[in-house]
Amino acid sequence: MEPQATQTRSSAGTAARILAVLALVVAAIVVAVVVVGSMGGSGGGPAGNRSESARAKPAQKYYVVQPGDTFAGIADKEGVSVPRLEQLNPNLDTQLLPEKGCVDLVPDGCKELASGG
Image (cartoon, rainbow, N blue to C red; front, side, top):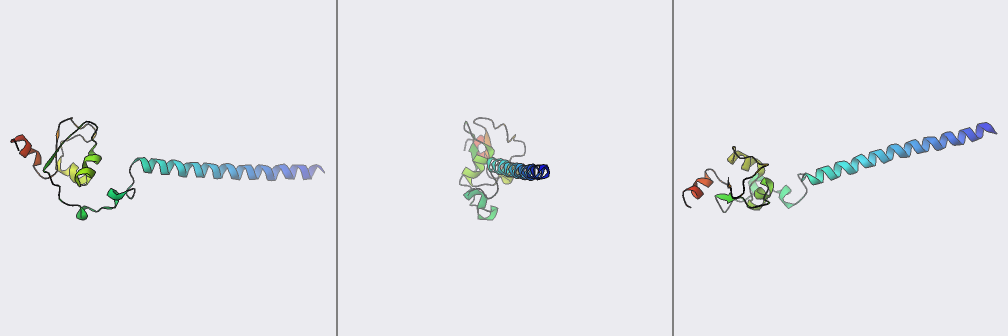
């Protein structure tokens, strides 16, 4: 009767190992979904579905940075892609936006602000 008891423990141990592996896989998927969601995945919302060609030309030529603004938030608010804003503002640190600083929405847009416009 001993072999039968050992066989039961062995199959219970195998089931526990399989469940442990499945739990790790599920946990990894959950972590990946949370990370991608927090980074604003490409298809996450209406802004992610717009292509550059579908975006309208910005109404303004420049944007004055307000407290709490982010580069991606400005891009979404003004209808300009982040890569386009980066191209228009090569000397701007996108992680440290200066409060009341100027962000070009079109080429040389901030020059209009500087000249009193």
